[in-house]
Amino acid sequence: MGLARVTLGDGVLRAETAAVAAGTLLAGLRASLVADAADTTGDGPPVDSRRLEPNGQWILMPQGVRWMSTKEASTRLGVTLRSLYRFIDEGELTAYRFGRVIRLMESDVDGFIESRRIEPGTLEHLYPSRKGVTADG
Image (cartoon, rainbow, N blue to C red; front, side):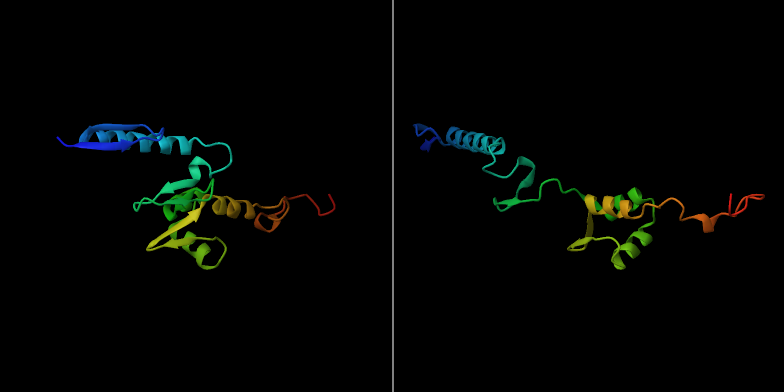
């Protein structure tokens, strides 16, 4: 087996076999990533806001964003997919298209639910008045 040189983060040079060197290098990278992920000093983005792309680049994701599928959102709202698509199409509910997939932010769905809250005293037209009760009490 051939020898390889590996420089570790502490600056120490070691001569090892290529297989051991590759393992050492990967272990060093893992340790570096774990240390970066544990960074709570505020210098870097929080752990849950970073994602590693297949090309090896880190991208930042807004912290706390949870994406829902249309099926999840319709189940949460208790409506059919058709009604959900109508809400989206009429601009009542915000959705995002990623290729062929439509996703909704959980916070948008929660806001939509809150906006549909019924104020007391607004449903009198849906039930008949009780017999023997007059408008003046």
